[in-house]
Image (cartoon, rainbow, N blue to C red; front, top):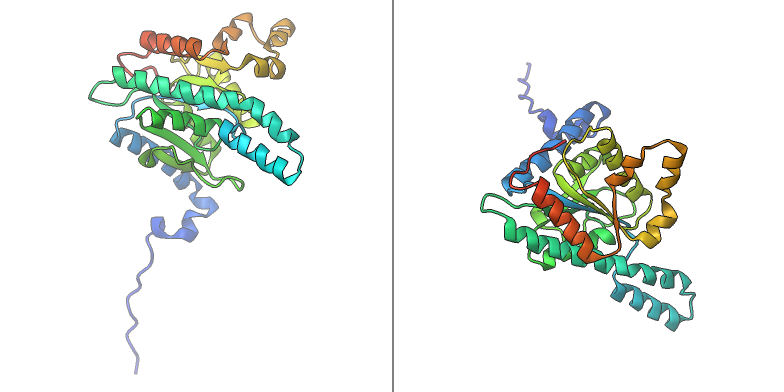
Length: 274
């Protein structure tokens, strides 16, 4: 006597974790990392951003001083921590500049959306300082995180509904630059240099046609790291390419330059995207 087999209930492909994680589903994952930020930015009226890049290793002065005190109390070497202490000025400069830009943006934003929202890579260090400054000024702030084995997640100053985690660097980079209307580069390492030079390449080649002021903050650091004048001397870049960067050590100067550029080129409409 034969028994009737039950109907099958297979999972839909987009609910099948094994498939979604497979190489064959990579285009689906990439598309998701494009559409999710687009959808959330539209939902929360985020029209454009001011982007901060810089080292994840530059900490708040209070935290570094506490680290030094603990090392001294334990009789351990504090030389590395002393070096970190010298860099804390960039954390505080980032925090203040982000706060001032947030307050300025709030003053000029209309009821239809949020203009020039502070955006970072959502990690510690300079990223935390920028998100923190914006949040302390009463603004919402974007964090475009990336899944890495040595980071705990997005810093707590990122606005929760504007907090993202990417798998792919290239989709994250797209969402860094697509809504950006200004860029502040604080001292940083390989990642900061990568983001800086990708931006400069897009501007130089006019793949990004919008006006994007790029502030290189911290001449003591950058003069040792970058010798772009040598590239002009060798003829590998043009002298005019140096005008893509605005160098300063002064918060007032950086604020005045960025707001002047945004008022002239990015208001009243958030157009001119890449």
